[in-house]
Amino acid sequence: MWGGLRPIPSRLVLDIATLVSLLYCAVSSPDVTSNNTTVLLATVFTTIATAGLTKRWTLTFPMLPFLVLQCLRRVAFVMEWKWAGVFIGSLSVGLIFVSAALSVLFPAVELASPIPGNYNVGIIDLHLPVDFSEGVRRGSLLGTQNQDSVTARLLYPTNEAPTDMPYLDPESAALLCAELMKAGAPGPLKSLSWMLHTWRLTRLRAKRNAQPPFSCEKFPLAIYSHGLTGIAAIYSYQALNLASQGTVVLMVDHTDQSAIAVKRRDSSHLLYDSSLISNVYMKGNEVEYVRKRRAQTDHRVEECLSALEVLKSLNRRDISDLKSVGVSFVNKLEVSDVTVMGHSFGGCTALALAAQRPDLVSAVVAHE
Image 1 (cartoon, rainbow, N blue to C red):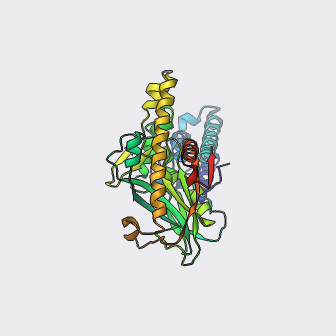
Image 2 (image 1 turned 90 degrees about the vertical axis):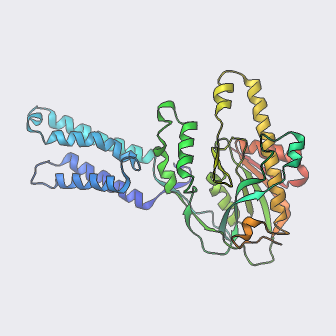
Image 3 (image 1 turned 120 degrees about the vertical axis):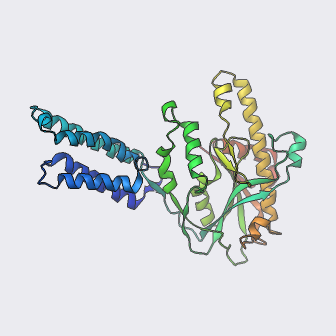
């Protein structure tokens, strides 16, 4: 139902307890001698104290009119109306069901564990030093002539025990949620980035900066290209499964402004450019739209090719980002076995790369 995700147990228990408490308050008597008022106040206080008004919005938003109704139940002249009790009770129960439905549709979820493999998984977020001179010569890069690195996430086999680590970079998570809402939500919701707050609760089972296995085995390589408005991190589950089976996966954050937000080496962010949709495609200029998307595809291919060259070179020597965390892949990579992968726009990128340089690619996987 949730695309392979699973509810976060602690949040699931907390949400169920809140809903049960509210249901008790809705159907029991508000008489001062009962526990109704105590349970209501305790539920409201616990909910607000643990998550404010927005971090559990599926509960707090229906809870606000629910509180108004429960206050009306305690006003004597309101309850003198013949059908007041039935009306208020029905609305209160209805709001609880709305809250339950929202909690199911927008749950606090976490990624399932990777498909069991021979290895645990290590993760390194790094900036690959790249040479774009060939892409500049061919004119297939979009404004990156002065760029000397590619932001990437590397997932690889390890024997070290995994830990819980954030799905999204904590320093960029708020910005990512805000930009995703701007790019994909309907007009009235574009500024409500807190609706994606549960993404910031999701964790990965992996070990940051882990050592690769100390063995003579060499691992095949994969390059992964993200889709439109994506970033490398949100495809970590796919890469986790590949890495647990023994593949070194390099996931590139593209700088053609198709990514929702790319964190540069200086911690600034390159944001998604929505003008292709709003100013070109939506105005019916499909020829210009296709031309610009093809230019972005060429740019993405150049980035993947440059990143692949650096990834292969790690079999011979370490780069500074790896030296700084004490990790080495020297003599651990099977550089002749390369799979190029991608989702949506990334699938297009993978196919274009394979068509341009079939000599570098063993297999291609493009998925929607």
